[in-house]
Image 1 (spheres, rainbow, N blue to C red):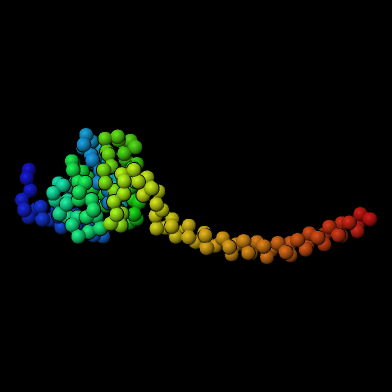
Image 2: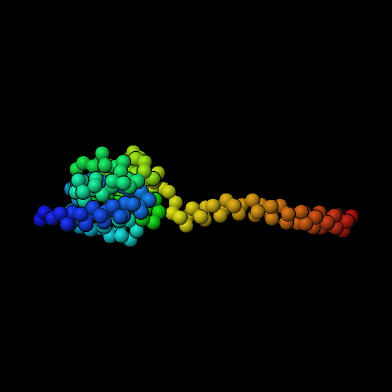
Length: 175
């Protein structure tokens, strides 16, 4: 059933609103997937904080104007679904990559982060990006390491002294 102008404007406004606040975007061709598979993909995306939408390419191009993902407009051909990461940059990439492992018909066409286009093969690097919490924990581990090493070094001095005194005592007792 064709959309009227009001419905088209609503779709463009919704996708534009999501795209303007998204951290990364992926466009993948879904040709050949069944309704059940698409429903499963949508469920996984919703659970991961990813906005997933199938939009006509003409409407998607209009929606991506004046956003960081305007660079994706040129490559939009064929039946595409758009996935926008809302919480962390790699969430959409993880969802699409994991789903594409099991469903070979889902093919990544466009990948964009921070206003830059990446090659479709770079989805692996994007998917491996840590979440915010993981990045903070990695940073804290790096910051904590020198302090822990200093503490262990300082604790080693009295321990070595005690071991030396004990060795001297044992040597005197044996003599």
